[in-house]
Length: 474
RNA sequence: GGUCCCAUCGUCUAGUGGUUAGGACGCCGGCCUCUCACGCCGGUAACGGGGGUUCGAAUCCCCCUGGGAUCACCA
Image (cartoon, rainbow, N blue to C red; front, side, top):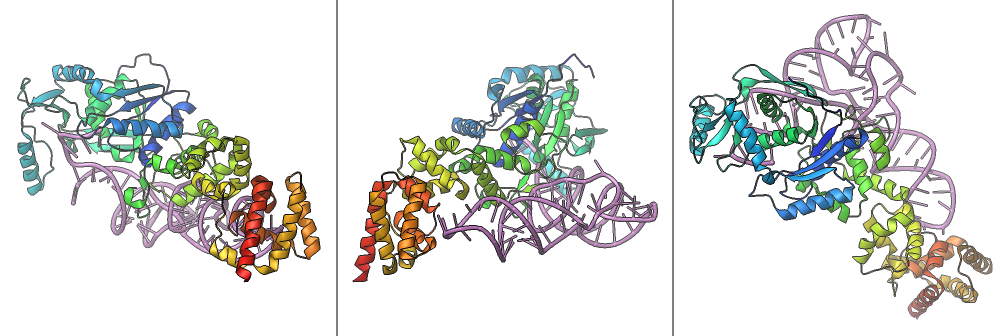
């Protein structure tokens, strides 16, 4: 094979077909390709495989772009669209026809089906029988173009992940390169695209291994150097079948909407099927620095949403509160809350930081800070808003009313004073106050909560609690 | 069914002939503590089966079993 002087620049690609949302499994192969390109200081190209005109939609394309953008995956070249490259495919088709590596076939779909069924019935392989292979037909409308594939010998896929995989050529048949409507088929378009886009590293899903020998045959017919192939194992659901809707959320956007951080998603998806010793947590930058193809595993992996959730919590915790303001906003807005004071929001986030596994959960937990009126959880009120704490609450209210500053330190001394006066321990006072201020039995620290809610609201919430207790006393 | 791939705790995995088989998620205890979390400490749990090779196999070979992928004018 002729080796022209090509640079050793690594070129990878991600070629989604726009027939739906971005599936996490596809996202993972996109991530592998992207990370490898970044790691190798190479190039990552995006290509839209829209030759299935029936099922491809503009909306799907936009959804995929959005999901990639959210994940922080950027591309250096493209997006290319296969439907805009028809003339390029035709040029190579001509070349194959001229060199005798391809031929026109006029067998009808019905005839093909018939020969396939016949072969099945007689125990043979359901392949095209080569009826038109040597007829040297010329172009006619309705004809397809087939590859004149070798009848014997072997084709070996040197896979960087799986090792070498050998196929007998007689298992393959003269598959179609170009459909009767002039649109190239997947296997042909992929090869021409990868070739002309200088893609030299093809990392893709396991489900493509059976296509690879066919594609290699096309490369060879064109006398072109082969790219490096690497087939990554599939993502499975808990029942070990291909990860799909019935297992739960499968689209990247769904996880975005549930309040996952893109870096957590990235981290999880990469770690599913790739490892770096015992390390579990990776920042985006770390991944770019250490990702490699050698440590991609050979076996399929089950998508574990529990682990993703835990990892998301880790990433939330590792993100400074200021950086969470923007991503959190949509989740607040969804609950009718819009924040003009981002300093306040930072303080709020700091109290929820270690307590939230998702942004959605964080927004939900933050609700009491903004409420005009606190609704008590029934059990909480019943357990803590009792006459026995009335004195303490009233004393605390009196303390608060005299306070000029509402800092955590000063608040703490106010609580101390009430503890001394009543002889109650902090826990006995903090819980009723917590219910009064948040409506719940669990919340961030009582001093920070009190400080953030602020004097006016704290006083009115305390007054409401006192009234509540008195009302029930009667 | 043909072809191809895969096989370590429930799950993600480390491991590349000699380890008390390690880590993480989950789960179960404990500590911390104003609640809930976080954090910390501890525990639970795995080499699918059978043959080889070898002084010695999770590691190498074969068979079986089990799982998965794919067999289109879809990608």
